[in-house]
Image (cartoon, rainbow, N blue to C red; front, top):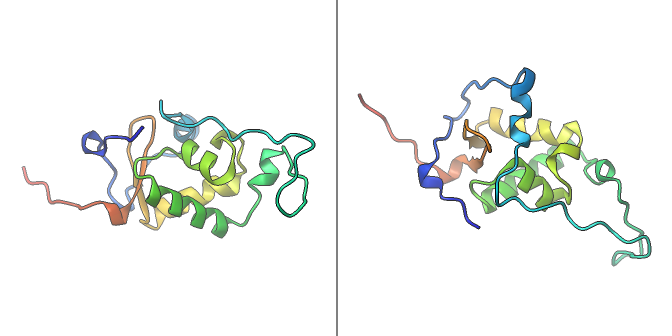
Length: 139
């Protein structure tokens, strides 16, 4: 289900947004179209390389902040208007609430570096700044 971006209001690049206290959890709110987590692996399944996959979501998302940043940016470019939760499911196979802190830090570094912008109302949606046109608003 595609999200209608025309009715959403996004922050300006590098806008200061409160991420303290309970506000920091707002990005975890799921959109109605968000996928569930990826299916769990059976104990007997093996991947193409003959390795047994793990069910530990935190291990699956354990990666450098730069790799998480690249994965999230690619996903947000491919899926404009996505939520953080949906991007985590597609990129890491798990919901946003069980990823490690480097994944969330990677997301906010994309915001801080004006690579992506987001809505202010929950569910928070993200788009790449290459996908937007900033128009001057006059009174």
